[in-house]
Length: 112
Image (cartoon, rainbow, N blue to C red; front, side, top):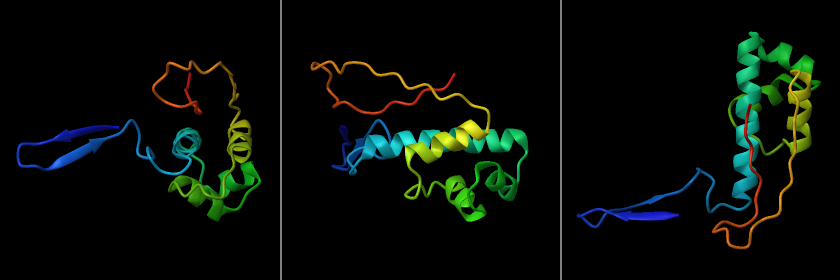
């Protein structure tokens, strides 16, 4: 976290992502990134929520939750299954965490 103080004693804290400092913040951020990609693919295909729900094998309200970022009911596995249904490969790469890194070990999501 970076704290910036303005001349009028007002301070702003900048973080690398919106979940920084929250319990399981890195995992929440990774889920949000996966959900963003799922929603982008749904939009690219022109699917309605009902159609996406059928494709994923979940309910339409679950697709609505996915679309609005309410992800508490979604595990990584469930998000992966949605991506698989959208013909998207999921690649998991493990690497040793360098003890000199400023941040603790965490989950990173990248897209190709």
